[in-house]
Length: 90
Figure: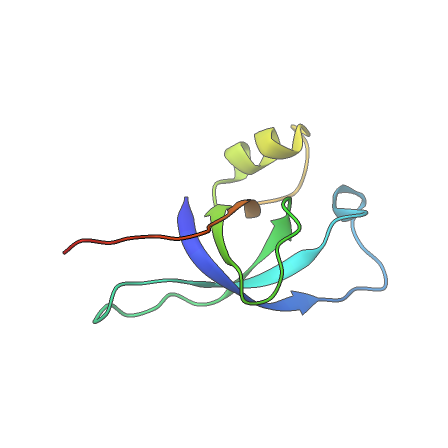
């Protein structure tokens, strides 16, 4: 699981059957100050998140398929929650 910020959407005219009626969002991983950020990635939305939302993302294929209740889905990343607030004590 990682925390990320939704920074965009992906629009497709033809999608894989496992993605039907679901949005694809571009997520930017959040990192602590001084750490190097990972690359943005695409995640299937399961929560009705929008641009600017901080989200919790499951980035493990088997767990993502379990969330979707589809053991054969071709998915790696799925948004499983919208984060209201986060507090980090260092």
